Length: 297
View (cartoon, rainbow, N blue to C red):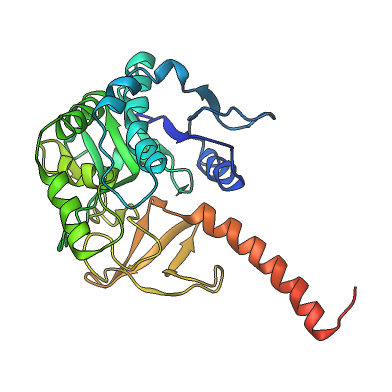
């Protein structure tokens, strides 16, 4: 079976949740690359750590085109979009035809050969999650879990440059104008660009259940492809509302309301951050609980 390399891209210091996300992906025997501008001082096991500098070939071109149309900080939105150029160059230079890209807080629960086999009946050049309901300029796709081919990621980067062409009035400006008129936080981000690219030929929506499995769009909401799709509630582990996951043989499932059956998730978003936050919170609660009750030792 074909194996996909797993790629993480992270700029800045290496947080605990990223280390845990890498360890989780490695626990299924996957080959992992971490592209970063801040190599860890210690040995980061389970991943091949790669300096992004040799792959930052389009930064001047993209910086000359980029227009900031968001209430979020400039640097944040710039990097979120520019990372796709880094991935494009990395895949081309390293000769990687297909990869599974994961955000830094995603937990992967599969070997990528199983994922490839699962979608072998689908023909696509790029795959990620886009919800069906896109009203009021929501316009969002997420590639926090994405399968990219060399041609797919190259086409996406071409579209990004085209949408930011100087003097070009397009859907990005329409979306930003709506946010300004309605005084709604947010604006244009890479999710907007992914939404637009999903209308091109060669797209596969990983958020749609396929043969009993899917990828998570956002673990903090019940939606995936459609509204209120999965069982959702207060998590006893995280003390926050999440999809109500249950585990069987170390793999997560969630009750799918439209089909009234449990659907497997190949990967779950934000899980690494939630796990790290839960551990910090439980420690604090144990300490403060002892102080309140006067308990010692």
